[in-house]
Length: 324
Image (cartoon, rainbow, N blue to C red):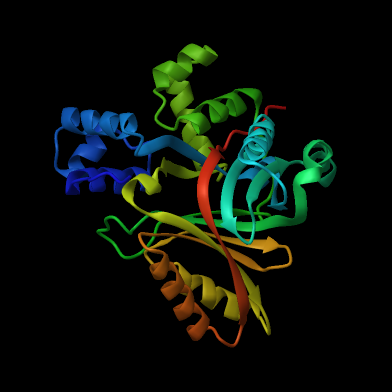
């Protein structure tokens, strides 16, 4: 099932995907509508489940966290078994992303952990309970994560907005109040200052100052939306790129080229058996493979081959940072 959106709806989504914390006056001015109309349209997009969440994007490495992703190929697992596995993994507070897939992998989930030991505590609990369904497994460590705003449904600028975070960033210290603010707005980036104030017993003015400080220090990278792209008739494909004869300069050229593609939403440099992950949203499967054919042709000297998955559903997508 797909939903029809008019140009104003697409402009609203476009602006919120760049900054989901933008005020109603800011959005109204950019879109050319009144604040009241923008307010009602956003509410409708939420009610119709086009917008699933308003996300704050923090920098995990700045908070001493590393991103680990687990990829599972399952065997003899029924739909009920898979649902049980997904629900079990989702309950872990450190799990920030889960995805049911078709293709190379059947299930992927991501964990933020302060150490490899902390990661394996969560991982081993899952494996001990569900190992009988696991045919093959892979682990990746995220070195750099680059998120791009969506430009496939509307764009007034060909240059993407990037949110980049990764292991090369230095650790930063935050106090308990900052951490509580961060955890509240990661779940809802449009949460009002007055509502945050009611939760934390701090004045709205102090909270606004602290949020600005978190932005300046690079602890908050930006604000996005979790979009139900399937409802708009688009599918999400993830490509796993295997390089050969690679240099840092050629890898940079590769990433810079990929970010010009309007359907890209994410690029992740990893430590795994592959070297890079790319995520695309396309309205046809053929469009995704056309994109990958062009990439292979342009970078035939370094792209050895690639694997793919089609993401069927993202059961979990959060940026909550566990409190100390």
